[in-house]
Image 1 (cartoon, rainbow, N blue to C red):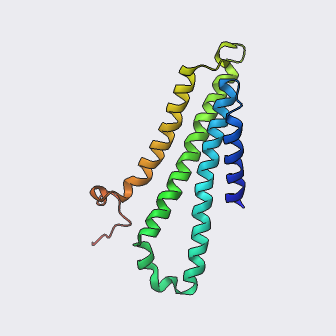
Image 2: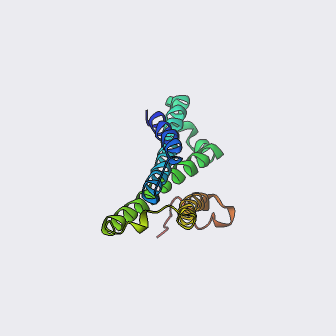
Image 3: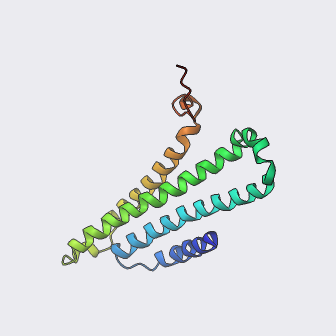
Amino acid sequence: FAVVCNAFAFVTNTVSIMNCKNIRSLTNKAFILLISLGDLLVGSYLLSLALIDQIYKEKYCYEQTQWLTDSKCSFLGVVNTIGSQISVLSMTILSVFRAYTVNRNSINVYNALNKRRIFWLIVQLLLVLAWSVALALTPIVSNLEDFFVNGVYYDP
């Protein structure tokens, strides 16, 4: 259900972005588009996890180590982290933008759509995507594998 609804929201916002007349609506729709993309990734992750659960069923305990060290598990973790980070960062930036524009509501100059504002909006969107991907890929980089650990053993 989450995958279908977020795919619908993604397509709807992609189409409606082309009709934006001012920077406020363009910014709102662009960040809502990113939020729906992030939620679509998280929904895909959960759907994949449910399918894998059906495959392993009652033999997961026997194959736990194989699953946890498999590249599919790492890939799903990356997809989930990217989706979560895209959603959280986009909601944060959108909230700040909305608070800022509410305080500047009387100034109508900000509402104009020009190339400089569109450029900075695209930069913000790309930074959210780049930061999300970089954050998700960091734990699986081989040079950093000693930095990220699953647990610590203490021998008294």
